[in-house]
Amino acid sequence: MTAEPLRTGDGTALHVETQPSLPGLGGLYARGAAASGRIAAGRALPGLPGIGSGRSDHDPGAATDLALPEVAYRVPGVTTTGLARHLHEYQRLLHEPVGDTLPAGYLHVLAFPLATAVMVRGDFPLPLLGMVHLANAVELRGPVRVGDVLEVRAWAENLRPHRRGVQVDLVSEVWAESGADGGQPSWRGVSTYLAKGFELPDAPTGDESPRADWHPPLPTGRWALGPGTGRAYGAVSGDRNPIHLSALSAKAFGFPRAIAHGMYTAARALADVGHVRGDAYRWTVEFAKPVLLPGTVDVAITPETDGFAYVGWNGRRRLQHFCGTVTPL
Image (cartoon, rainbow, N blue to C red; front, top):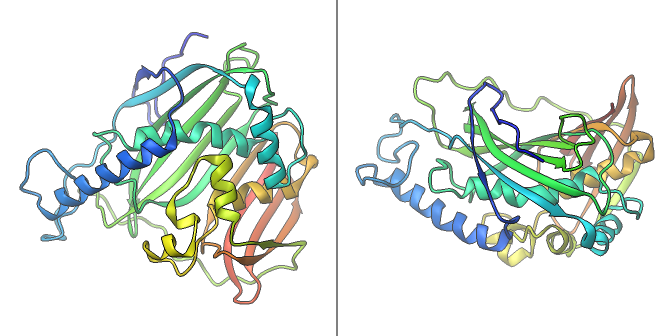
């Protein structure tokens, strides 16, 4: 399939760089740690040329230009023929029906390393370490099956202010190389992240307000998540961030215990919606308080006029963990 010209949502043309294969997350996290250290040094010592960006710790009012790389990564010829066993492991873990159709959450797992590769580029202005995952918006336009040959694309766009820093969208797309989708990606995901403490020059403070008081609905289900939940999802997703693996490694990053992956909880809720979502749907999630492991999550799936809403919370403390929608197309 010939790569179509790519543009961001505001029309910025992107230079497409073709990669030989999808990268591994392990090496990307090592690069991300090094880049995060360089950016932190640049903020602490803004006079040093060639490193860092953002607000100086010595002059909190100062902000330098933050610019996203106008580059999209593309990996053609991604074969899914050998993914059946891995897919079935994912489906069993997430409580999806076992079969040869790749759920939307699995396609996120497939594309996530390429988006991460964008975030560890030398010209990406925000640090990978410490980035807060705020939300996801996904469209699955039709079934993707084991045996399909795919093209995966990823880029960053829409850098904008947030009341606690700046936020950015990482866009990923999965295209069927057969061209059966009529010029549209089979799957498209937008992941929104927050980098705390950064500023955009001459930008107004973001209008995001703290979450209003929330009252939980009647639960339709309850998850009992064991201490190994983060390790299990890390094994199938490749996302072995230390905050998910053990209490000891999570404490090094300020968490009292390991926390569940946000996309594990979102994909588990998607699975709870079940087959009524159909083969094509929009799926959104917003994250609030992290889920500590081990832990219990109350979940409510609520039918709405055009689809379903879902929410997960801590029933004892009445704290919301996540909420979202699933809308059949």
